[in-house]
Image (cartoon, rainbow, N blue to C red; front, side):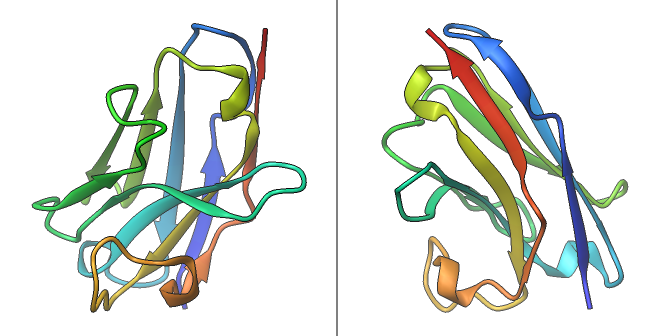
Length: 125
């Protein structure tokens, strides 16, 4: 079992920044690929960013590329999502998820093994 706990969400004005953190426990964090997903009201859950277990590979959705940065600190068992130049359309619940095996890159939501409970990000205009 892997437990994931997200933090760092909140209310921010458009153009502002937030940094989300996801703390993992339970297994060897460095063996796992990590992803940040988000789900806005009435919309499907979508992959925002992903990072491989060695950090050699990353992925960003087109909608956030150039504004968001995913990183990981395996010594701290934590993955981060730095979000800059936030837009109202970034408003969503953001979830951290993980899997040991990713036969395709980027990983898909159905292939993630463990999920956090999410943290709400609200961007006001």
